[in-house]
Image (cartoon, rainbow, N blue to C red; front, side, top):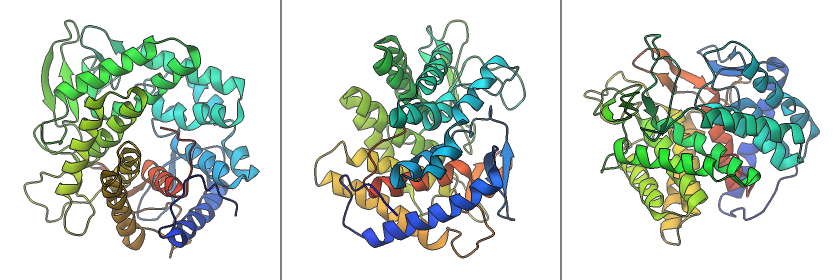
Length: 385
C-alpha cells in the first residue's frame, strides 16, 4: 500500500506500517457494515451501533476514511467519505437539538479535510456554514462558546462551557484563514482564554464544565460533568486540554497556550497508573472495579505528537516518546486484531461513567484518534484538527 513519507520517523517503522495495514483492513470491513450510517459505539459483541448524522460523533468515521485516502490514495475511501459533509449539513435545516458546539468534531473531519484535499466548493460552503453556526454560540459577556443545548436533566443550559470545546476551535481558525475574517479567530482566542482562566487548574488538571450566569456572563462554579466530582480530574478532559491548547498554540503562536498544553500533558503523564492506561478519572477515591478509558489515552497520544512539533529537542523527544509508550501499551493489549468479528479498533473506552453510558466499550472517536496518531507517525501532514 502506498503511504506518504513526509517527515516520517524511522523508529519502529515496521510496527507503524503493520498497525496501519491492520487498521485499513478493519475499516474496509466496517465500510460494508456501515453503509451510509454513522458508527458511534460498540459493546461487548464488537458490533458498531449507529447514530443519526446530527449526533456529535458523526464526523469521526468519515475522518478515518479521509485519512486513509490521504495515506493510500485508494478511491474506495474517498468514495465512502465523499457525501458525508452534505449529509451532516442537511441537519441545519431540520428540527434537532443535537447540533451544538461539537460541529467542529463533525465538520473538520468531513467538509474541511475534504476541501483541503480536493478543493471542493460545496465542502468549503459546508465548512463555513458550520463555522458560522459555532460562532453563533459565542457568549460575548462571558467570553465562551456555549456547550450543549440541554443538560443531562433535559433542561437548557445557556451558561455552560466545557473543556472539550477546545478541540472545536480549529474550525474557527480555519474559517478565519479561508474567509479573511478575523472575527472567527478572535472568538476562538477569547474562549480559549476563558477556559484557561476557569477550567485549567494550576497543576494541569481540568474541570469538565464551567458554569456562567447566562445574563451577565459572570463565572459561577465548576461542575464535575463526566468527571467524578467538581474537584476531580476526568482523564479524557485532561487529554482534550492537552491537545486543544497545543492546537490553539499552533494557530496563534501565543506562548500561554503552549504552557497550558505542557501543564496538561505533564499532569496526564504523571497521573497514569503503572500499566500506562488511564482510569476514567485520575482522582478516584478507590480504583478497584473502576473502568479505564483508552479513548483518553489515544487523544493524549495524538496530542503529545502535536505538542512535540511545537518544541525543540530534548522536549520534542520527551513528548514523542511518551506518545509512543501510550500507543505501544494500547496496541499490545487493547486492540482487536485477533478478533475479525470485532468491528472497532480499540476496546476499553469509557463514554460517561457518572451516567453509566458506554462503560468499557469501543468508541468511534477512540478509534479515530488511534488512527490519527499512527498516521502522524507515518508522516501524514494534512492535519484535520
